[in-house]
Amino acid sequence: MPQHPPDASTPSLDSLEQLVALLRNDDVDAAIDAGLMAAWPDMCADVLDADARALLLDARSRLRTAWDARARFEARNARLARLAEEREIARRIPAPTPAAADAAPARPALPTNAAAILARAKARAAGGTS
Image 1: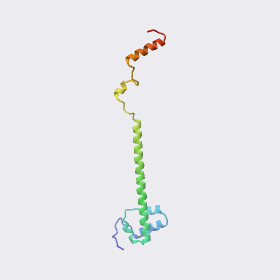
Image 2: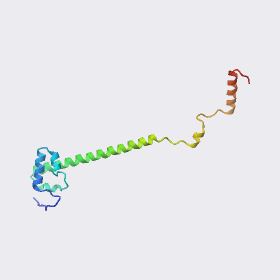
Image 3: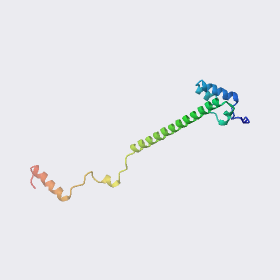
Image 4: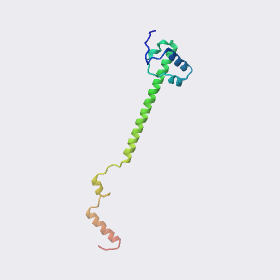
Protein backbone atom coordinates (compact mmCIF):
# COMPACT_ATOMS: atom_id res chain seq x y z
CA MET A 1 0.00 0.00 0.00
CA PRO A 2 1.33 3.42 -0.88
CA GLN A 3 2.27 5.67 1.97
CA HIS A 4 0.99 9.23 1.77
CA PRO A 5 2.77 11.97 3.66
CA PRO A 6 0.44 13.21 6.40
CA ASP A 7 -0.82 16.76 6.26
CA ALA A 8 -3.59 18.73 7.92
CA SER A 9 -6.29 17.17 5.71
CA THR A 10 -5.12 13.57 6.12
CA PRO A 11 -6.84 11.62 8.91
CA SER A 12 -4.76 9.27 11.01
CA LEU A 13 -5.22 5.51 10.88
CA ASP A 14 -6.76 5.66 14.37
CA SER A 15 -9.29 8.26 13.16
CA LEU A 16 -10.22 6.14 10.17
CA GLU A 17 -10.63 3.04 12.33
CA GLN A 18 -12.79 5.02 14.75
CA LEU A 19 -14.98 6.14 11.83
CA VAL A 20 -15.34 2.57 10.62
CA ALA A 21 -16.26 1.39 14.13
CA LEU A 22 -18.91 4.10 14.40
CA LEU A 23 -20.32 3.19 10.99
CA ARG A 24 -20.43 -0.50 11.90
CA ASN A 25 -22.47 0.47 14.97
CA ASP A 26 -24.83 2.49 12.69
CA ASP A 27 -23.87 5.69 14.51
CA VAL A 28 -23.65 7.90 11.43
CA ASP A 29 -24.21 11.12 13.39
CA ALA A 30 -21.23 10.39 15.61
CA ALA A 31 -19.17 9.46 12.55
CA ILE A 32 -20.06 12.81 10.95
CA ASP A 33 -19.08 14.58 14.17
CA ALA A 34 -15.82 12.62 14.19
CA GLY A 35 -14.92 13.89 10.71
CA LEU A 36 -16.48 11.44 8.25
CA MET A 37 -17.28 14.22 5.78
CA ALA A 38 -14.19 16.32 6.44
CA ALA A 39 -12.22 17.36 3.38
CA TRP A 40 -9.77 14.53 2.94
CA PRO A 41 -9.07 12.54 -0.20
CA ASP A 42 -10.64 9.11 -0.52
CA MET A 43 -7.24 7.57 -1.13
CA CYS A 44 -6.48 8.13 2.57
CA ALA A 45 -8.71 5.11 3.24
CA ASP A 46 -6.27 2.89 1.33
CA VAL A 47 -4.58 2.04 4.64
CA LEU A 48 -7.72 0.17 5.79
CA ASP A 49 -8.68 -3.38 4.88
CA ALA A 50 -11.00 -3.79 1.88
CA ASP A 51 -14.25 -4.18 3.86
CA ALA A 52 -13.55 -1.20 6.12
CA ARG A 53 -12.46 0.90 3.15
CA ALA A 54 -15.62 -0.01 1.20
CA LEU A 55 -17.82 0.78 4.22
CA LEU A 56 -16.16 4.14 4.81
CA LEU A 57 -16.13 5.28 1.19
CA ASP A 58 -19.69 4.05 0.60
CA ALA A 59 -20.96 5.98 3.62
CA ARG A 60 -19.17 9.14 2.43
CA SER A 61 -20.62 8.72 -1.07
CA ARG A 62 -24.17 8.17 0.18
CA LEU A 63 -23.96 11.18 2.49
CA ARG A 64 -22.54 13.36 -0.28
CA THR A 65 -25.40 12.27 -2.57
CA ALA A 66 -28.00 12.90 0.14
CA TRP A 67 -26.59 16.31 1.03
CA ASP A 68 -26.45 17.31 -2.63
CA ALA A 69 -30.08 16.23 -3.03
CA ARG A 70 -31.06 18.25 0.03
CA ALA A 71 -29.25 21.30 -1.37
CA ARG A 72 -31.12 20.92 -4.69
CA PHE A 73 -34.43 20.54 -2.82
CA GLU A 74 -33.78 23.65 -0.74
CA ALA A 75 -32.77 25.61 -3.85
CA ARG A 76 -35.96 24.45 -5.59
CA ASN A 77 -38.10 25.49 -2.63
CA ALA A 78 -36.40 28.88 -2.51
CA ARG A 79 -36.95 29.32 -6.26
CA LEU A 80 -40.64 28.33 -5.96
CA ALA A 81 -41.13 30.70 -3.01
CA ARG A 82 -39.51 33.54 -4.97
CA LEU A 83 -41.75 32.85 -7.98
CA ALA A 84 -44.85 32.69 -5.78
CA GLU A 85 -43.92 36.02 -4.19
CA GLU A 86 -43.38 37.58 -7.62
CA ARG A 87 -46.81 36.31 -8.75
CA GLU A 88 -48.43 37.68 -5.59
CA ILE A 89 -46.82 41.09 -6.12
CA ALA A 90 -47.96 41.09 -9.75
CA ARG A 91 -51.50 40.20 -8.63
CA ARG A 92 -51.61 43.10 -6.15
CA ILE A 93 -50.58 45.71 -8.71
CA PRO A 94 -53.66 46.77 -10.74
CA ALA A 95 -53.38 46.50 -14.49
CA PRO A 96 -52.67 49.88 -16.09
CA THR A 97 -55.66 51.44 -17.83
CA PRO A 98 -55.24 53.61 -20.89
CA ALA A 99 -55.96 57.32 -20.42
CA ALA A 100 -58.58 57.31 -23.17
CA ALA A 101 -60.53 54.59 -21.40
CA ASP A 102 -60.89 56.83 -18.33
CA ALA A 103 -62.57 59.57 -20.36
CA ALA A 104 -64.87 57.26 -22.34
CA PRO A 105 -68.13 56.07 -20.74
CA ALA A 106 -68.58 52.41 -19.91
CA ARG A 107 -71.17 52.03 -22.74
CA PRO A 108 -71.06 53.80 -26.05
CA ALA A 109 -73.57 56.66 -26.29
CA LEU A 110 -76.56 56.39 -28.57
CA PRO A 111 -76.38 58.18 -31.85
CA THR A 112 -78.17 61.53 -31.68
CA ASN A 113 -81.10 60.38 -33.86
CA ALA A 114 -81.68 57.33 -31.66
CA ALA A 115 -81.41 59.46 -28.51
CA ALA A 116 -84.07 61.87 -29.86
CA ILE A 117 -86.45 59.02 -30.72
CA LEU A 118 -85.91 57.51 -27.27
CA ALA A 119 -86.60 60.84 -25.58
CA ARG A 120 -89.88 61.26 -27.51
CA ALA A 121 -90.93 57.70 -26.61
CA LYS A 122 -90.22 58.32 -22.92
CA ALA A 123 -92.19 61.54 -23.03
CA ARG A 124 -95.22 59.82 -24.61
CA ALA A 125 -95.02 57.03 -22.07
CA ALA A 126 -95.00 59.57 -19.26
CA GLY A 127 -98.16 61.08 -20.66
CA GLY A 128 -96.69 64.11 -22.31
CA THR A 129 -96.96 65.08 -25.94
CA SER A 130 -94.26 66.06 -28.29
